[in-house]
Length: 436
Image (cartoon, rainbow, N blue to C red):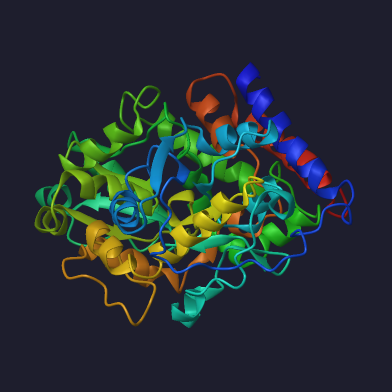
């Protein structure tokens, strides 16, 4: 195991142990009720920092510009290198905290940050009443307390495909299930087309291929069983999905540079028609939007959810969908961080969704014209999606890192499953989960 990976796991365990060592030791607040300043109140001389990942560091651009102009505050967006989640956890474990950070708003990942001790509660946030009721409580809550602010439509794991590549090769309909998708991939390969593109070097997306294969099992309670120790990553469901992924790679259905390809390569390959399909989440489409306008995207790029039995998406709010506000010990900055969130989801929200060409979470704020059809299809699939590992499991082990090592040739599928299960058990134990 690489040294940095050991450190990341150690940081995660340290955060989890702190969370469960003495439940009564640290109150959620210092006894005062959080106040929410006017979104445009003056903040001259206040400096705020937002941590973001490679795929979310451009998301707040319009909001930051508007907030700075309105309040006089200075906001700096700092990109934390991938793997983002491990980098953030390591920093926080050593006491290094930003004012705000993009963060996956699931219970497992809020637990990983020791939310009770490290994050500001957002339970009484003034914008919550503006949310679509179906989305208001879909994520961001841990043990009855809201810690994350959802800013964009939660991600769905599914397949982005190049419509022109499909059409040029006689494919007139999208697949109705996972096996049909693989059959299409083999047809494309026979015609000299790269069926699927994976970003092995940047690693974080490797897990989507396994998780979409687990959609049916998840619907049937897989993650609840894993949480109770009644099922494991080494059992047939998960190990079988890992083996299937490996077999498809070995079959040559992926890009030849899978070991070295990065996130930006994945976006360019699909947009340019160098590959037919990519299994990804919403933040991937954000990359496409940064390089092509809606007319081009509607012409070239489509989306369909996929699962073994049909077109079921896998719901996974990712770190580009939400932000958390940290307890920094500086009351003025903490208040300013809450104010920035109020501005984001208040006066700045219409400009934000227009700039991002994304869907509105607030019925009173219409979605902007020109939202690409693929993004509309992703949002439409959300209601029928099933929860991912991150959404339903009590801990979020490094499945994707282990899969990347498998792609690199240093782990077998069995080793991936065993390492992931061992870490899951460690994390669950550290979080005080019964049975571990």
